[in-house]
Each structure stands twice: as structure tokens, then as C-alpha cells.
Length: 248
Image (cartoon, rainbow, N blue to C red; front, side, top):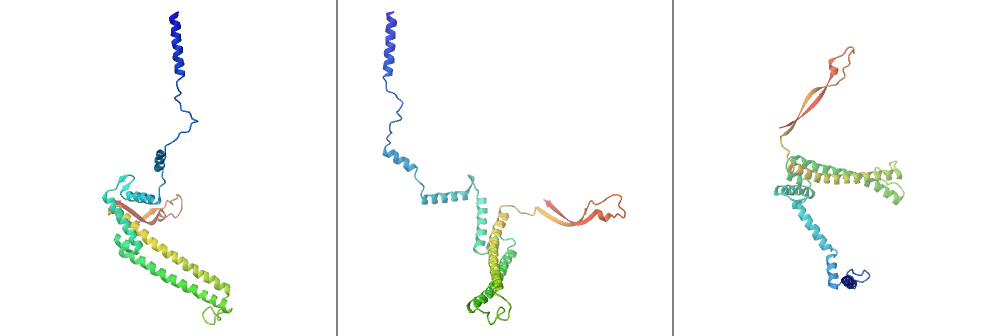
């Protein structure tokens, strides 16, 4: 019995000692002081990117994109094809027709067509400018002197009123501006044509393996009906053109 009592006393002493140990869980109410060196290190890692650094990064990404496509390195043939394509459209932007000459092919047809379009646009713009100035000059004279001009096709010997002059003046100006926009579009089409032709020539193989042939033929119409009197076999077929593609 005495041994049991001594054993219980030892167990109680052990529990009392463990209860007096300091709690290892940190107190959430206490303020943690971070050294200044640690703060500076955190701020340096989260530093905002400057404009110069952003430009350098974008430039490096563009430079990498020239040699890699989806993390796959381009071979020398692909790089040369892309260079030829860039050269073609840039030359057409500098001088219309230069990119077509670079691509060769039917450049001797394309270049005259391009410059013919520019020459035609010049004459059309010049005409509508003359048309616009004609009505504008008459309107300015009437506004200044309050009477028609003594000479000219819109002067005293004509039946033009002010509203009619304004209407046709605006009509000439609108056509002149529209022609200028068409000319700019013609210039852009010259660049697009040089780019597309370079792609078709260098990136895709357009060879003589594909050919087509046009020939006359008779096609069935399906208009036959039994029991129709005076039926002719001509109504069964109609003339047409057959196009045949051949892959060698």
C-alpha cells in the first residue's frame, strides 16, 4: 500500500512540473518587430518595373519571337522566308511596285497597273478640285459683291442660284475627298499584294503539279417527262463548260 501511495505522489509531481512549463504557442496579440534589413529586402523584390526596364523587356521578347515560335526554335530556312516577306512589303511601302519587283513573277504587269492607278487617281482628283473651286469662287464673289460674277459659266448669263451653287460645291468636294481615300486604299492594296504574293511564293509550293482544263460539254437537265408529245432529245441536255483539275 505504501508503494502505491509513493507512485501516485510521483505522478502528481510530474503533472505539476509539466503544467509549469511555458506555452510554446505564440501570442497573437503581441506585435512582431521586423528588422529594417528584412523590410528593405522585401521592398527590393517587389519593386515596380520602370519604363526603361519595360522597354528593354519588350524588346527582348520581340527579339526572341524572331527566332522562336511557341518555344520552338526556327530553322534558317524559316527565318529566311520571313525575312523575304518583310523585305517585300516594306519595299512596297517605300516605293510602290518595288515589292512586286522583288517578288519577281508577273511584276512587269503589276507595276504598270499600280502606277496607272495612281495616274488615274491624280487626274480624277485634279478634275474634282477644279469643279469644287469653280463653284467656290462664284460663291465667294456673290458673297463679297452681292451679285453674280460678270464672266464665267456660273455668272450673270446663267440661271444658278446660291443654294444650287452650294449643293454642287459640296458635291465636288465630297467626290474629291472620296477619290483621295480611294488612292490611299490603292497604295495600301499595293503593300498587301506584295506581302501576300511573297507568302504564296515562299511559304507554299505553287508548282505545275496542279493544273486545270476548260472544255465545252453537254450537261443533263433532267427535264424529261413521259407522255409529253413532240418531245425532243435536245431538252435532255444543255450546253456548258467543264473545268477539270489534275493533280500529278
